[in-house]
Amino acid sequence: MSKVVIGTHSGHFHCDEALAVWMLKQTKAFEGASLVRTRDPAKLAECSVIVDVGGVYDPVQHRYDHHQRGFTETFDEKHATKLSSAGLVYKHFGREVIAKVLGRSESDEELDIIFQKTYNDFIEALDANDNGISAYPNTVTPLYKESPTALPQRVAKKNPNWNESLTDPEVDERFLSASDMAGNELADYIKGLATAWLPARSLVVDALEKREQVHPSGRAIALERACPWKEHLLALEQERGLVGDKNILYVLYPESSTEGNWRIQCVPVRPEGFENRKSLPESWRGFRDQELSQISAVDGCIFVHAGGFIGGNKSRHGVYEMARLALEN
Image (cartoon, rainbow, N blue to C red; front, side, top):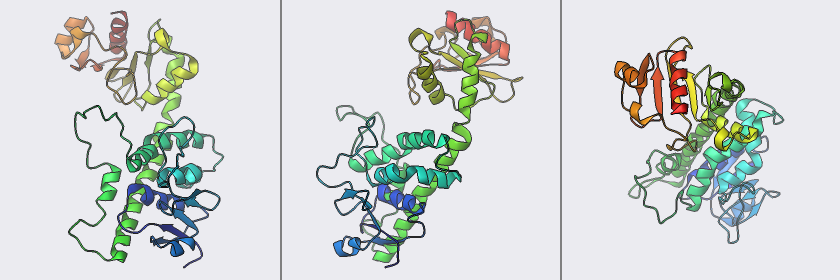
């Protein structure tokens, strides 16, 4: 064996160990490591680090399995999802992986925000999937089937079909392909947070500071550019005590130029949900253009969605007026 070796189990593979192996390869300790896929305890004992096999979780010895009886490790006290090998490796090496992907120092102040969000929105679902934890109670019948294009399903498809015969080296090649695919998606996600999602926070902060310029109630904000605002807004509201009758109901933003068309969008109860804190007036919903302008008594209306969660106007003034009427309705 070479000097630095990553070990994991042979046979059918899953997304958690595929991603765990990729993450380890991004670290200084295991960069350039070779990979051994086996269930032979003697061979595993020779490895520098072992993931998803061996029945031991011991970060000091670099043993990261989660299948053993009595294992209950979670990401932190705020999370209840039991970790898979992906979560274990991320918990111990995630900051270093993020720093490597972004070309930054681990002391960068923004890294902790990215570290937490990446676990919440990317890694935790993989932990739950591998540990058989459903996103909803088993008493609830899903309204639709999960998409077969989710990352764990695409990794699973890299395994040989039941009626397909491959040699062990060929399966190992499939595993490496799956590992690179999972790792590249994680890297792209992290880069997106750093270059697009996180910079949007400053726009939301600025809009909150100026919210009373939109309406005296302070319950609508206007962004100077369209950007990812939902999670930032809900987090900033909590930080600033803007809860209950002080929270934001509508967000206004330009489609492209501030001199062009504007949108008004309802703030959802949850970032990923479709329930609004306050929908646009029912009498506006499903109407467009001049007919909507006549109904609402606001010039320049473009549309209000039948679901009442978004609408548009040809000007900043027009969308401000739509917000005023919706707030006072």
